[in-house]
Each structure stands twice: as C-alpha cells, then as structure tokens.
Image (tube, rainbow, N blue to C red):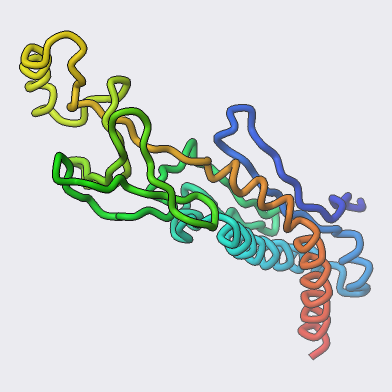
Length: 237
C-alpha cells in the first residue's frame, strides 16, 4: 500500500489563547522517494534528517532575524519556554518549533540600568528601555518613574510604584496602614508596584517568521537535495 506524504510546507499555527504558537516543518515524501529510486525504503530516515536539520536552522534564523529588529536578549528567545524544538522521528514525519510564553518582561530587552538600583529622593534619573533598535526612552507614567529591582525570589525586573500594583513583600504590607494614616486620605501607597511587560515571544516571533518563510522553503529544498545525495552515496559504497 502506498503511503501518502504531506506536501512540503512550513505552517504557522496560533492557538486561541495566543499564548502558544507552533511552526510545523514538513516535506514531500513522494519527491524524496522518487529521487531515491531503488533506495526508496530509506525515505523515512531521509525525511527525518531533512526535517530536523531544517527546523534547527529555522530556529537560528528566527532568533537572528528577530534580533535585527528587536533588542531582546538571545538567551530569552532560545529558552525552552520560548522556542522549544521538537524533532521529527521515523514514525512522526514532522518537526515542530513550539513557541510559548504568555508575556515577556521589559527587562528581557535593552534597559539601563539592567541591575537593581537605589530608589528614593537621591535617584535623579528614571530607568530607560527600548524594545526595537533605536534610542533608550525614560520609562515614567504619572508621579513615579521606573526602576530595576530584585524580588525576594532573586528575580530581577523593571517596575514602577503604582496604586494599581501588587504588594511585593511582607514588610511593605505591615507598613501599609501606618503609611496611610500618616499621609491621610489619598496618600500614595509606596508599597505597591507593577512590573513592566513587553510583547510576548509568540507575537514577536510570529511576525518575524512571516518575513523568513520564503527562505525556510528554499532551505528545505537545499536540505532535501543534500540528504538525498548523502543517502544514495551511503547505499552505493
């Protein structure tokens, strides 16, 4: 019984929650089988090699292209929670790049400073940041500017004091009533902060993938030719 192979393609699929997106890398098995001729039994193995080499290169191209426009740190995009490579196997003729992260934080991009700083009356300059290539901009909304801090967990991020924020330590919570009483009605609660967020990896890489998709298709054809030649050479030794 003949096997039906998928047409060569790389597909982008975004899940309804917009938190997870997939890039499926597929190739034309019939074309590979025809090119292998009497060695057509090697088609599954050849396809697996084509798919995995194409997917790995696509991952590198995605990160490189994204960093040409955005000033995001490479380690953030390559992290397994952001761009996870799931290889093809002999039984699953499909490689996949899985992009999952609800939201990046602004600290993942270019910031000055990028380490915790002192806050208070002595701090004259607000923290600055940039998502795309270009100059850094001061981050300020309302009465307070942004600053970089470190949570008790050790996580470093950029935040701003805000009445709509969350309390970030037990100590700040215990001091809240005293601060309110001392300041009177409308006194700004300095114990509450919000974390600066930025575009998700799925949104950022989705736009980037649309730009490199023609190059991915060309890469697929090149990898098919190379793997077919390698398989025939191996069988005719």
